[in-house]
Length: 198
Image (cartoon, rainbow, N blue to C red; front, side, top):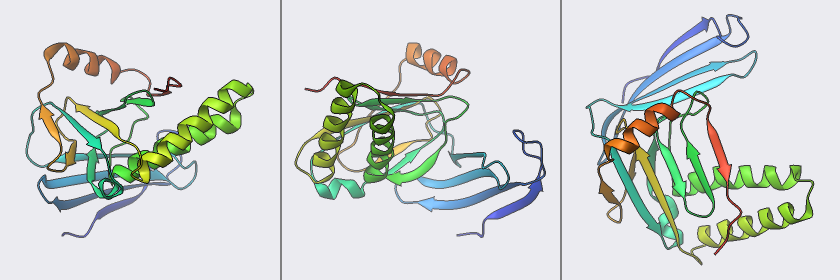
């Protein structure tokens, strides 16, 4: 593994100060291949953006996995900034200017979702909204403990995402979805929480 390449004191596009640090790292991910990890972080305004990109060009894809045990929390996930993550009846994370790419695992994905649900629960003024958020948190905890099944889907027009598991089902994205993703990618990032429970 090569040492990360770092460039400091760059101009931040948000606060316009020279406090931006840019980093690029090349890593080898088993069953995915050579991958570049990029990030830009401003020490002044805390602006941060990150992404991942496979060294080899990959086809647009859709990957789905059913989470059914606590052991599944360890499954490696690569999510690019162009990817949409779908967790039915809980959330959809769509790409946009504020979307980041990262390398994590199933537990990491669910913990990100939990953080947003907890924030909504704290900020909600309506008791019903708070109750629904608490139900979602309980559901997520049951999934993370292996007591409840959950399906996670990643759709990526760039092909730079992956759920690395023998349980993963992979298919191609159709042309209509590709057009929709490129349209969404030029608009605002959306993190939407659904309160519909089954």
